[in-house]
Length: 320
Image 1 (tube, rainbow, N blue to C red):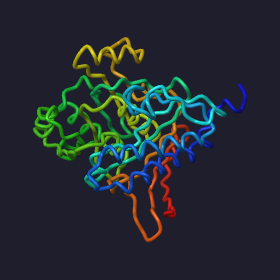
Image 2: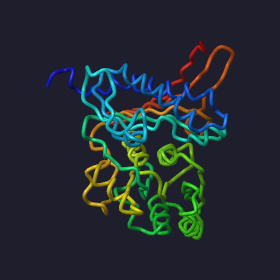
Image 3: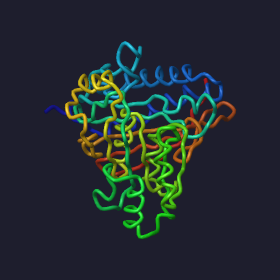
């Protein structure tokens, strides 16, 4: 294999951070402006332009949708300048378009890169997700457990009572019964309005106070979250949820045959991965874009699963 074809994650990682930063800076001027589509499009345009500067032969496997639904960064789109290794790209140019439009916390730009064929090509359907941070025995909690049983199992593993467990849940009507069952155990719940990639990452960041994430959200976001946890440590399970034949057809198109399969973190991301996220609005993981006279400052988290490294970077960018 030629050197040009090798996935040098260390060499590519800073370039990936620049991609994430460019998308965040582009969407910053639309924070609080009430226009979700414009904010998303600004992030998409900037991310696409920066990706084409990288020495990669990239294919978007998690993106803005199918080709006929998205003019850029659609699933299957080729990115990069074509001179480097073949890689899979999973991205969400603006996770939290509503959060950005309303200037609410935890909007991020998110991207992951791994060798070709190693990221799950998750269809645009729901995924039932369960995640905990590092330091626990494998299978400490599973999707086959009830929500209450998960809380009790994690509390036992942590050596505390259920009342010392905090669970992050996306606030949706479909989660009302689950929320009620979790609260019956005495556990606390942190509800989030959007952004379940950030929600899963919370589990691996001790400073957030979150012990576990559970609930249904987008399957593509599940692959991004698994990429982050592969770098930070922690466990994650995901199982696709299908509501109709159209969604089952999307899975077949993505090459998924076992519709009832439960995926572990390492089955969603089967090789070393790089993950980058940049804050757009202030959140519990990253600071949002800060405006100064003549400058915009962005905070980015950059992670590599090969080394387990987690790097935080502040980028002060002159406004032209």
